[in-house]
Image (cartoon, rainbow, N blue to C red):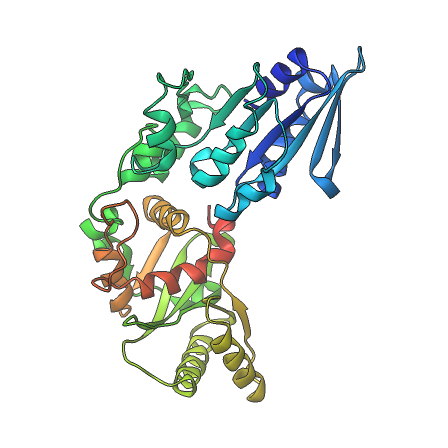
Length: 378
C-alpha cells in the first residue's frame, strides 16, 4: 500500500505536500519509511531523503527532478490533531487507522479539502464494530465513495502454507475472527476461553530448576481494587513462561505495609529462582519512589522499574497466543491468577470488564511481569 501511495503521488503531483500517519511517528518510520527504502520499484526511479529532525520525507524523481514532500505524523491520542492543523495536503495515508482517535483522522481529512485530486488511503486490522473507524468509514464505504479491499493472510505470496497454518494456531476467539478471518466482530463473553474451558491443561507444579530467570509484576490497588504481585519465570530460550508465585491483598493498607509485603515477596521470589527486576504500575509514582527508597535502604538486590503498560487489548491478545502455543504454565498455588484468567470477560463495548466484579489486578500484575520479554516468547 505504501508503494502504491508513493507511486500515485509522484505520478500525479509535483511540489505538493502529503501526509503519512502512523500510531506514532516512530512506528510510521519503522513500518513504512524503512521498508520503502528497500523496494526496488521505488528506489530505481526515485531518490528518498528523510529528515528526522522535522519528520519530513522528500521524494525526488531521478529522471525529471520533480519532488514532493511527505510529512510524517503520529496519531497517538486526542491531542495529536493539533500536530496536523494548518497544513494543506494533497493526500494522506493512515497506517493502522483503527488505532487512531477520531479527532486526528477528522483533522487530517480536513487538510485535503482544497485539493480536488486528493485521495485518502487507509489500512488497518479489523477491530470491534463499536470502533469509530468502522462506524464512520467501513459502514459508509459506498456513501463516501471508498474502494474497500480485504486481504487475508493466505493472500500473502511470501508466506508458505505451513507458516500460514502455524500463524492460524496462534489465535483463538475474537482475535482469530479479526486477525485471521478478517472480520469486524465485537468481543463478547469469556476473554481467555481456552483457559476457562480447561484450566487444568495449563496448571500444575512446575519444576523451578528449569527457570533461567524471573520477573515480578506489581499492580497497585485503589478504589476497591487489590494490590497484586506475580512472579513469572522463563525457561531456556524463552520456551515457556511459568507463573511461580503470587501475593494478593484485597484490603486497605498503608504504604509502609505495602513496602513490607513487596520486600517479603521479592525475597521469597529470589529463594525460588533468580529474580532481579520488579515492574510496577507506572501510574503510582509516589508509591514507586517509596519502594525504591525502602529497597535501597535495606540494600535489597532488585531493580524497581516502571511497567511498560502496553495496550490492554494487545496484552490480552498476547496471553491468548501463549495459551494457544502451549507456552504458559501456572503453579496450582496461584489461585487468584487462575481465577482471574477463568473469569475475565468483555464488557458491552468490547473492552475488558473493569467494574470490580472480576479480578483484573492479578491479570495486570502478571502482564507487567511478561511485557519486557514478549518478543522473545513469540
